[in-house]
Length: 241
Image (cartoon, rainbow, N blue to C red; front, side, top):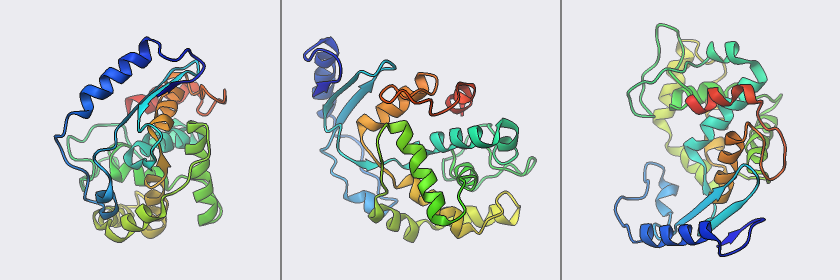
């Protein structure tokens, strides 16, 4: 356990240590198995990280153990799309309304001919299609740069998880083909799915996610690097989505 730029053993450290000890005793629930590679996760691993907007980071337990970002990536890629294309253009591709359905439901907004919101899989795929790059490798590099700038360090894709998602993501494949049929996406479904599966397979830690959240909380400014990762005008869009 450590606190960056703050005295060790302070009240936040003690609180997190106590919180970790209490929650570590909870053994309810089960690990995810819908992606085979995720079923290999060790349920005993547990970490907590807190990052403040002024650059202080507090961690306890397995906070620096890598795992794949999965659906958390959706918010940050949505922010990228807003910054690159503007609010009106992005709204023509994906809405901001709740669905009342599961994140992977095959439900689309037929009235506006778009997915309901960027936090469901359909909306995230529509957003992923907007990632810029002249080649697949360039698009992957853009995606990794986006997420890395939020984390304040270079991130990488877990290839085993990506391959597992690619091999078993038939429901997402069905959604993508339905979207193509209605012109909600225009690229080949496999190309959209490739970048989407890769974005979900980027490795992060609890510490990374705390810094990424603090970046949004701090008006788009990364608290460790000082970089304006997302214009402040789009923070509200991301947080309410």
